[in-house]
Structure formats: structure tokens, C-alpha cells
Amino acid sequence: MDRKIGEVAVRAAREAIEAWVRERKRVRPKLPEFFNQKLGVFVTIKTYPEKKLRGCIGFVESDFPLSEGLVEAAIFATRDPRFPELRKEELDSIVIEVSILTKPEPINTENPEELPERISIGRDGLIARKSLCSGLLLPQVAVEHKMDAETFLSHTCLKAGLSPDEWKDGSVKIYRFSAKVFAEETPRGKIIEETRKEASETN
Image (cartoon, rainbow, N blue to C red):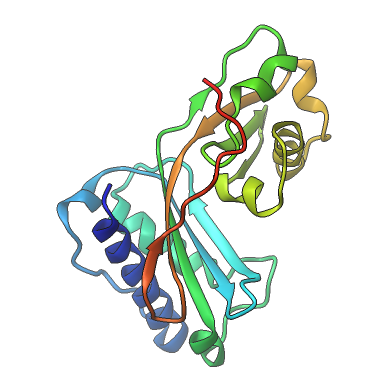
């Protein structure tokens, strides 16, 4: 996935956000063939210049093309229930980030205590699932909050509504995925690929 794809994705997310906030209009941008793939995607809105989270919504896996998931995630991010709905007045003071996900894979191990050794901070995002409970954290979350692998596992369990140490008892299924992350440096400005320094190298 080259940077051009990332630039197109972020521009499309920005277009979808602005059309929805200004006019309650759902846009359908014409996108390259790459966006016909059924890939997971998250759209993150941050304040500028503080870079504080303002909304983040997405799909881990999708039954519809990335082009559709991108637009829907962008619109839903403006209405993230953790925050007030995004207002027109804020459009000039936000930056957009798009994460395009690989298919999640289970981390299989007979001993849950070995899970941290199988996780690479900066490369892996995590999903914790147990019965009807599910929680996800993107790879960049661990880096931004300076988490080690055990802390990352615990916070993923918390996101799923589970106790932080529940991953240790083998009752929680842990999945990992990677993501290509592209973001505006400034509102409507240059788009860069976010590189995440890996704190550990694991298999």
C-alpha cells in the first residue's frame, strides 16, 4: 500500500466529514480500484494543534468495499458517543487520520502468559473477545500511551468491558492485526504516513 492510497483515503474521509457536518450529505467519492477490497478501516478525528482525540470509529472487518466503509466510518466519527457531535465551527481546527487494517488473526498459545511475547508494540493492534464482549485498540494507541505488551493487553480487555487481567486465564480470545496509518499534518494540509517505532521485535 503506497502513500498515494493513503492520501486518497484521508482526502476522501475529510470530504465525507465536511459534507456530513455542513449539509448532512453522504458523499460517494470516486476512488481507485484498491478501495473495492473488503478491508477494515478506522477514521480518527483529532483537534489541532493539540492533537487530542475528538472521535474515532471504524470497522474491524467488512462485508462491503473499503470505499463504503471509509465514508461510513468518517461520518460515524463525527458522532462518536464519547464526545459532543462535531460542529461546522470545528472543521478548520481538526486533523483527520485513516487506519487501513489487515485481517485480524488469532494469537494461538496454550499458555496465555506467553501472549505478551507474541505482540510487537508499534506493529500490532489487538482485539479481545469473550462471548458477546469485544474490544479493539489500534496499533498507534500503545505507542502514543507508551504501553508495554502486558499493559496493551489489559487495556484491550478493559475496552471489551472485561477485567484487565482476564487475558491471563485463557477465557479471552486475543487477535492481532496491523494497520497502515495516514494523517493530515495540519487541517486540509500535507498527508503523511505515520511510522510507529516498534518497542520489541517478536514473531
